[in-house]
Amino acid sequence: MKGKVIIFTGDGKGKTTASLGMALRALGHGKKVVIIQFLKKGEYGETKSGILEIHQFGKEKFVFEPKKEDFEEAKKAMKFAREALRRKPFMLILDEINVAMALKLVPFEEVVKLIEEREETHMVLTGRNAPKKIIRIADLVTEMKKIKHYYDKGIEAIEGLEY
Image 1 (tube, helix red, strand yellow):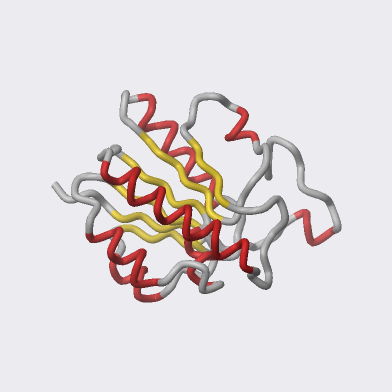
Image 2 (cartoon, one colour; image 1 turned 90 degrees about the vertical axis):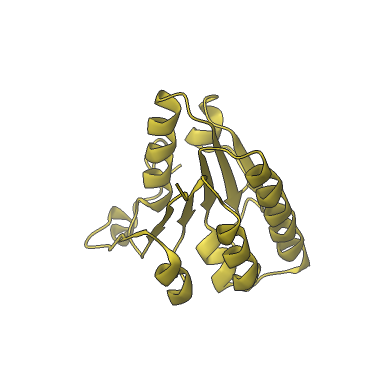
């Protein structure tokens, strides 16, 4: 059976969190999960948990206008994703890859090629602005839509909820 392609996108909270929930479920069944975080570097709850295999490629600050270092990190992340896929994990999570594609850090065609090479591995792609072409390829797409968020009232990110 070909692995499923699952996308979590949209402007609402919960895209990474949903993928981490899937990872936890798979781990509970003894399955191998590899998580690659694009555009992220730092200590988040998931990286400190000690139960997830997470590899980060990015800087500690969010990227709005990519610089040379951002392109280099994205290239390393894609190389690592190809290597991880060769190990045939049950699930490969590409966290924030949709944002990396939107910022042109990762060529869309490279992601499609990776998806085509997945064999039995289930792939989860997260991040805002998932390209329509990737959405068409996917087996399952969930759009998180913000209805209300305490950020709008100026409340800062809360440890354990946002990071």
